[in-house]
Length: 227
View 1 (tube, rainbow, N blue to C red):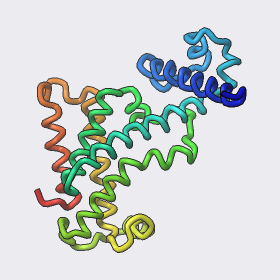
View 2 (view 1 turned 120 degrees about the horizontal axis):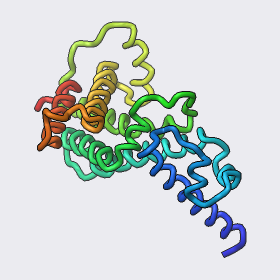
View 3 (view 1 turned 60 degrees about the horizontal axis):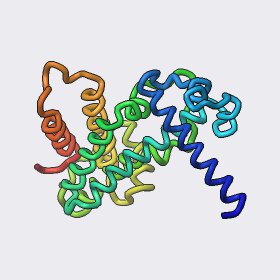
């Protein structure tokens, strides 16, 4: 291995170690990360950490991108093994929830309260849309194959905003399908967040997966599937 390759490997390993420690801090401090605290846990001078992440916001961005990619990958892998659009929808939704249950603090980072003073850069946009676009492809496929029967078009100014999105991602699919996708996605994310943030306490305690499946199917109905 050349010296340059060795340096690159060491840097990559150190970067991952910093992010790993930062994720542990999410569990105790939320998104209120401190590079000094991360450096202290690593036994490093804070100036050394700044060679890898120039600011707290840079570190937050890296964690946010990783989280979006991780939940996106989980949903995509689950959907890939399903045979029909509805089965892909259900598989993707359950995979997203299972990832969130296993990684609640990372879910809170990407779907919880905005971090004060932090403005997400455009680097986060593509990772952030992986699950949404997966659900959109599923609904578009269902629409194009006749599984979702065409319904009356929506009216309202917001439908005009959705037209270029439909044209860019799913040509031939009406804006209503895009609106249904986004609304259903919000419903799914809300159901996961309510569970993780303690809103099901003293109501659904034993079979939360079953309750989520009910909500996931309700979201599918909203999107136009006939169950």
